[in-house]
Length: 472
Ligand SMILES: Cc1cc2nc3c(=O)[nH]c(=O)nc-3n(C[C@H](O)[C@H](O)[C@H](O)COP(=O)(O)OP(=O)(O)OC[C@H]3O[C@@H](n4cnc5c(N)ncnc54)[C@H](O)[C@@H]3O)c2cc1C
Image (cartoon, rainbow, N blue to C red; front, side, top):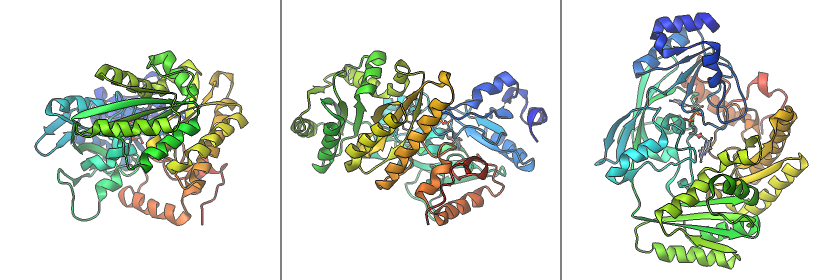
């Protein structure tokens, strides 16, 4: 069932106030933060788990794809209904259900915005650690689905390390509880399986997360270098010295130009590379750690070192980093962001390769990324108003960069997920046996293949042109 008849049937099932179906209403759900688009047949706005369950059961009976959506900030097309069907928005399931400071847990609905949770738990001296740069908008449901990271996951781990329980609606409508508040559960780690499954195994309707005490103190340092090589080598030296800062972020000159125009974070415009390094924890020993980092920066000929001495200065430095993607509008009407991972020590040569790939395809490339994790984010700038070839060139350069990441011993996504952007590239990293094993997990939870179809796994209709062939 599709189109107008599907919208009418959903009106009967959920009531018209929970269903969108006109052309104009559907337009906004064609997009997420990435570059691909597709129009849903209908959008559902459930208010309870029972609504989601009824919807899933209906979709199962009528063979309708079901695509969960949080805030739509995803960068791999995960929330795009590439095979049509119903998009399920969690905008109305956005309540914090419980804050349990004694057990360091919170229970939330999937539509809760990431930053809102830490704001609500701050009076208890607690926070939710994973802090994607999109944290003012992205939802916990999206974070769970993408196993999102952020600047501060270098020392504290990504979303999977901070989720202990989930309520799931499977694609046949059954409601399943996995894990809970306890740190460990018997049997298979199905919470771990669901985190990062990008909505392809089922729909998350409730999340139990770990809360972490706010650090007693933080110290944030900005160091500028003449070249990206010097900045990259500094990152390796800091880690090699046995220091694990809570964050090490890097930005190149083009990214700095955009950020300064938009945010005025105070980064030097003449720097070839900039590092933002943060250490946190107990007050004792923090200054000593910072002094060691400063010495390492100087030994790599840092041209400027600035320490944030007030909370406002610290916020300003972070506003620059966290606003970097949005600031790209100062340089170009469109960008295509890549998300590859490499071993940290390979940063200098891969960054050179990124630059060369951009030049080869006639594109400017800005870099702003989680350097401590070796998680690259080249932003390939193009102008879609000039025609489709800008995006095509950006995708070609992106594929070259990802191939180099994999050859360097890394992977094709660090935190943005596979979605519909990289499903055709999966054979670059995985053998056909690897993919078949993953497929069997998908089939066990979603035998009808209705949970976010067209994501993660290569599909014949979209991937034929790549003909990459799985590794043997
Ligand atoms: C400016 C900017 C900066 C970013 N910075 C970072 C960063 O630092 N780190 C990082 O990891 N990511 C980052 N991202 C990517 C993105 O914000 C994250 O992937 C985020 O977790 C997506 O959340 P969302 O609510 O927007 O999800 P959406 O984009 O709506 O959906 C993402 C995926 O989650 C699935 N999904 C959503 N809700 C549910 C649910 N309830 N049940 C099952 N599946 C669900 C969707 O089907 C889709 O596959 C950034 C994005 C932008 C635009």
